Image (cartoon, rainbow, N blue to C red; front, side, top):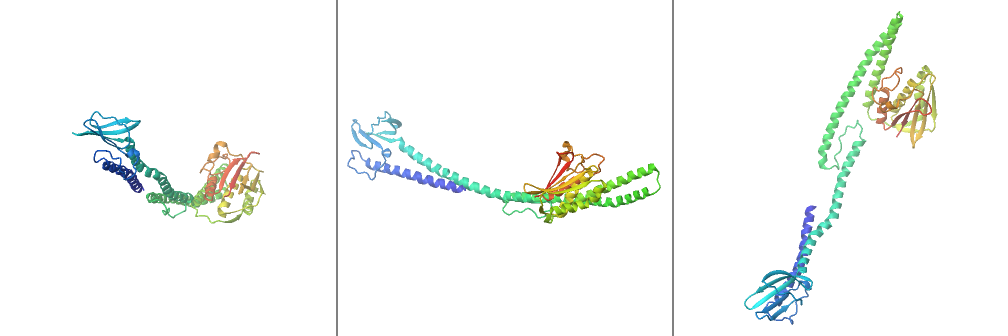
Length: 416
């Protein structure tokens, strides 16, 4: 592009300057032809009409001071006291004057400075005009080139943003500037190393949790057998504590295994799900647990709704939130499961009557092993972490807030 602009500038400068110089030099040829011999040349017809400023003022005097020859504009140019070049002002116009003397004549020739400036102006115009014209053209070409380059980068960034951790295909390099290709290859290698490390971590957690379940189950059986034997009150109390500890450890191992499975789950298979039916089915599964804690369920269907999604994942998500509501609600409490819409998006609210969540603990409730519940309420701090991971994998918005009408918590699920 720069080469084209330089060639265009050179060509236009040559044409403009050649035009003006040819016009000026042609006038000089005519002047020389007219003044080649002394004497008046009033009867000599010019070959062409020259511009007034391009004509030379020629004056020739003999040694007696008599004017023997004159041509050009009738301008009274002062006589130079010394031979050579000089600048003079005559009749309000600047002139470049040359005086020459020999044995018979004194010659003085004057040329208007405006003629010389016109040549310089044409030369400057010829050099600057192509560059000025190239600015919008260069702006258009550069903008188009950059937009085409950035279009490939935007496509690449969109592709990266839409990818999940389960995608195995490398990033595409089609339409991407060649200078970015090494970066894309390096990113693919980095992602592959990160994926390998993540898979190793998941396998370790899953294997550890799975291996812990068998000895913990054996310990639970032994604790139950111990409780069935004839024990003193103190020993029975200790056996009960041992059984509760084993049960909590078994629950923690199960949740660790569930966490590993959730984070390493394959890409979901989406299908149409009737949310009202799903809620009813989940509530049926929790009836026995609710009866044990003297808790009542209330199903409130404000508007029927269906979504496309992974039914097993959505069931797991709602079940975790409902299990938390049952655990934290007091006896004879009421848990309400409400299905409605928020900004034309299906929404499930689970309202409990528990102690609520402290404001300072609210930002951390989805962290692993973080517990905001009272110590007397059992838990491992993994339930909401698993729920958050499940929601994020399926583009579901999950949120918690304290109730405004009474003590308790509202867990909200908003579907895409």
